[in-house]
Length: 418
Ligand code: NAD
Image (cartoon, rainbow, N blue to C red; front, top):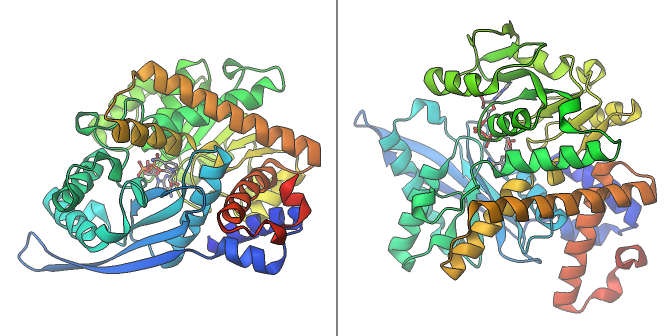
């Protein structure tokens, strides 16, 4: 995954004619922290996990990025996702740098009490390097508002009332209205903008979605509300499809009761991966990395891919799809709705003020549309794909901010300054 992010970065860096040293500076994380988390298990034994926080770049503001609890979490994984956050916050132009972290654990095998002890111990071990003006975590895979609330509470025990230390908190605990659905809503906004360029609207399209967690389920609900036909969805349990369109509200009730999409009536069961190659105009990968590789890219039928997940395409898969004329809206643009509303939440927290939900929705849409249009315009101007254009835009913003902080503008190539 780190290789993939670096390759995408380097393609944009080639376009900008960045020299090796600048590339190295921009790709190297500011700080990498690994901690040992030892806690009591419910059974009376000990749990031992590794926690990570990689702080990639702080040129444009405090670092920002989610916490992922997953057996695959390690330093390299956190580093690649942290780098993505640096470019993502720059693409949507929110005043943050990038970070990411998490714990190498399987939450499905932990009780809530165990998860609480692991989380609070992790915060005690990293408390000196996070904070509202330093690094602000948020939810990611297998973490949620409840866990963000525990983080705020633990941090506040050491530093006083600090709602701005973490975003994605419960609304009762200074979370923002609209944060939970923000990434899904941002996905909808960029898709809408992309279709608009072809004179189309959401009710013209069929959509397949891989992953039915926070991002996938909200995207499905919002898109179906706006008239899109959701024809296939999957999660870790498998998938379901219905050519006439799945009844998304009923599917949400089913998942709430059963925990997974499998078994949903009024739909045909499909193998989990089949969702990626199912017949649909739009494909939204909203699960984990590298879902589409050289092995299955040829079989993808959609002509628009909106990367709701981080890193769902390998570079090889990306090239195959672009050569086939598929439009790929890259992760650093497509899923930036979450960090954008996190920024709104943090702004509300630092001002001790609460926005109405309508304001959150309106401002999010404004940010996402502007970011999409800037990327699409640059792509058209320079004859490059959307991903390269998004990285070009982001690298310019980060490099210029770094240079302005240190009076080193003379080291920047002219293409960074146009
Ligand atoms: P989540 O834990 O809420 O949901 C993940 C979903 O993916 C679940 O439905 C799970 O069953 C499914 N899944 C896992 N492995 C799968 C597989 N092999 N096949 C099919 N489905 C599978 O996580 P989330 O917060 O929805 O995050 C999903 C993706 O979106 C991640 O890549 C994350 O980094 C990215 N993202 C999340 C946010 C956010 O605000 N939560 C913001 C930006 C990006």
